Image (cartoon, rainbow, N blue to C red; front, side):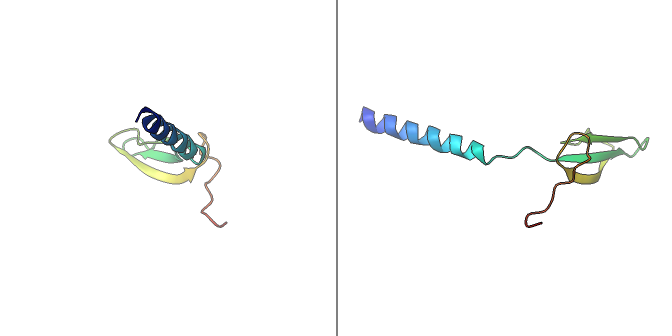
Length: 71
């Protein structure tokens, strides 16, 4: 029973590691303030009062657009 449990745990660990190989970083977006018009580049909304203004991008400067699959 112990060997079966160890094998199951090992299998879960290996498959979990394999999933990390294909993981990609979150995309970046330009966010524009509704109040001041300021523009920032972030992976998530800076908060209330911000609207997405462009993207997705691959870098933190919002300079390199993500290409859709197949292009």
